[in-house]
Structure formats: structure tokens, C-alpha cells
Length: 289
Image (cartoon, rainbow, N blue to C red; front, side, top):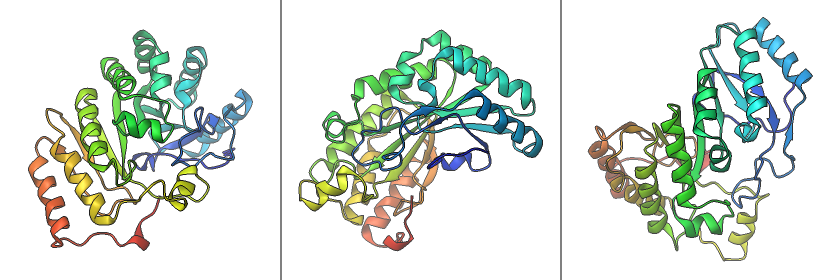
């Protein structure tokens, strides 16, 4: 496989064929993300992608899923995406699901009919980074989005019949906006109604503007206890939503997993016990991206 730079995929795609179609991120301005700071957004050549598909055809016959990397493959034109999905279907006929990252902008740029066409050709799941449902936080981290725009994108994915997995980031509002970040993120998720919610916890990368904001004192990090309280606020405000809920990423202080609304009470109780100190949390040195 011809991989370039940091190839990042969701934890749930660990056993998928990772086909790198683009490099970098089409936005690449978020203050907290250092994944692609030195990697310009480019579209890989058709010859290279075909060679990688040939490799997968020969060596990946036990893998039933394909994940299209890097940060925002959905930003590609409909013509290119349709051609790619047809090529995957023809060359890897045993693959039954294709997934990718999709920014809210990329989703909104597709019509409902176009998303449905991609689904008919094998696209099964879109991973969307919400990060926060609080407009003040989104503006602060230069996400280039609003909660309204994110909701519109998420609802369109669901309407197209695609599986929607949405990530949010604990701690992103800093201490000042912690409760507002949690409550408004929950409110936004309630409106989007994703199939899956994945909660990560902020980790500071030295090559980011956010790291500089911490050094100059303009951004105050949350303590592990503050993070747990923020998680509790988010969970208690997640209502009228049916989804898989995961806060078990390697960055988490308290790994949690369950289904909402069935496990709502149990999840809240676990967080409450961790806040009270009766459940051990993950030590700082064990956390990772």
C-alpha cells in the first residue's frame, strides 16, 4: 500500500482495508488538531489507488470492509466517488461495507440523491467530527462550522439511510466553557440523532495553536475530575436519542460503553462513582491518541 503521512482511522475500522484516497484534511485549521499540520490536502492519482486495490485483491481477502482515508474523502466530486466505489465493488467483490470520514461541509455539498447513490454503491458509514455543539467553542477552535450546520449535515446522512457516527471532544471548551460545551453538545446530538456517539478526551499536541494558548494562559485545561463532571453533564442531557454510546477511546479517563436510552442510568451512575472516587480512572501516562 502506498501510504503517505499520518494515516488515521476510527478505532472501529481496525480490521478494515485502509485505502488512502486523499492525503491530509481539506480544512486543516482546527486549533486542537495536529494530525495533518505538515501535510497538504491532495487527491492521490488513479494509478496509485488502482495499485493499492490490486494489492488488496491479492492480500486482503479476509477483510470484508474498506475504510477510505484520509481526513475528508467525501469532499471529492460525486463523479470521482462513484467511480471509486464501482472500482472497489469490481475489484474487491467480497467487501460488503465501505466507510469514510465526512466533514459537515462535504456532507452539505452532496444532495440527498447523491448520498443515496453512494449508499447504493456500497458506502455504509460516515464518520463526522462534531467536536462540540457549542457555537462559541466551535468559533474558538476555528472549526469553520456552526451547530446548525452540523445538525443539517447529520440529519441529511440519516435521511439518506447511511450509518452516522459522530465524535465529540471532552475538554475542548476549556474550564470557562466546560458546562456550556457539554450541554450544547448534547443538545446538538439530540437533534442529529446519530447511530453512534463516540466521546474522546482532549489531548494537547505540541504542534498546535491550542498548545500555544495553554502556554500563554488564554486556555485553561480541565483536570481529570473536571472532565468527569463534563462527561456527566453531557450524558444527563442526552435525551430522546437511540444510539450506541462509546467513551472508551484510548484518550478517556473513564472507559464507558453502552446503548442509549437503555443504559443511560447505568452510564450516569458509573460516572458519578468515578467522580466520588469509588471507581478508578485511567492514569495520565496510560492515555493515548
